[in-house]
Structures are given as structure tokens and as C-alpha cells.
Amino acid sequence: MNKRIARVKQVFKWGVENEHVPPHLQTCLSTVRGLKAGRSKSLESNPVTPVPQRDLEETIKHLTTTLADLFRVQLLTGMRPSEERLMLIGDLDTSRDVWLYCPDQHKTRDHGKRRMIWIGPQAQAIIQKHLSNDRRRYVFPSCRRRQNQPYTLNGYLSSIRKACIRAGVPVWTPGQLRHNAAFKIRSHYRSSRRMLHGSACAATTNCGLSCSCLEHFSR
Image (tube, rainbow, N blue to C red):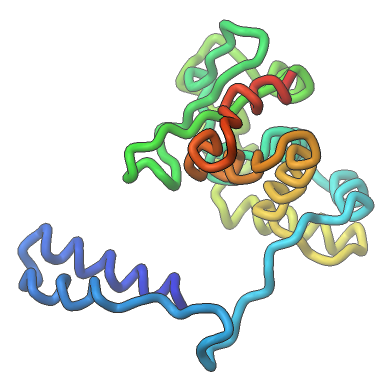
């Protein structure tokens, strides 16, 4: 429900910016608050949980080589599905031991925040197989679409779903892999989950933990 409220606000904001809607309507909508958990009759969504390790191992056996590698890199780095699907070779900074990927489009871009994704040796070894001299090429292009076209989100979701069914395990989504990665990192660094998920740097909220922690972990 809160997502729908946010979408409506965004639509009216666009309408005001393009002079299709009177400004006072956006002002009125801005006062509408989101629903709080446990305080309304709306159905609440279940919390997103990590995928059981056994389910992951069984699912990967039924994926194509490219999708399996895309899946492994996401599990190692905690990228959002969209960040990995749209990753170009030219987006990668491979000049250091731990590679750096800064997506041009990401969830907190409108807030002036820079999304930094550190890629360690294990993920590097997987990505290396897909690199070429063409910096405009997608790292994980779809094999079913035109040359150098990324997987669509629906295509990625559908492939995972079909693989889960073949493997005989409960269907899970790529977004859950971020929680697997966050759980692993959280066991090493307190509050790293917030940093991995693109939240404000934990250095300002938890006694000085900086983004260098994630770079160190990736090693």
C-alpha cells in the first residue's frame, strides 16, 4: 500500500513539473502519510528472508552458464538485480585489487548518494570470463535477445522460477540474494547490512564504521 501511495505522489509531482496539474494538489498529497505496521487493516507483506543454502545449490544446477554466473556474482556482492543486469564492462574500475562498480542508476541517486559496490577476487574470477575490449558491452548479456541486450527483470525472474520448479524447491526471487549477502557480511561487521543495501554510510550512525570495511571484506 505504501508503495502505491508513493507512486501516486510521484505521478502528481511529474504532473506539476510538466504543468499538467495545479501545484496545490501536490502540496496536499505531500501531507498524506504512509501506513504504519500493525496500525491499519491493510494486509502486511511478509519480511524478505535469505534463501536456504540447499535451495540455492539445487536451483543453480538448472540455470544457463550466464545466468548461473550472474546469480553467483549477485550472491557474492549483494548487488540489486537491476544493478547487475545493467552492468557494462566500462562501468568497472579494475585498477585496484578489489574492483569497484558505481552504477549510474540506483535507488538513492535522487538523494545525491553514490552507490559503491566492491567486487572481490571470487566475483572477479566469475566476471573475468565475460569481459572483452568493448566497454559498451553488458557483462551478462541475454542469450535470447538481440546482441548486447541485457536480461529484462521479467526474464531474470522467469528463469529463476523455472529453475526452482525443475529443482523441486520453493520459488525464490533474486532480491532475496541481497539478504543472503547481507547476512554473511553482518556476521563480520556490525551494521554492514545497511551499507550493503545502499543506505546512509554507517560511519554517521554506528561509531565510525566506514565504507572501507566493505572493501576490506571483499578481499
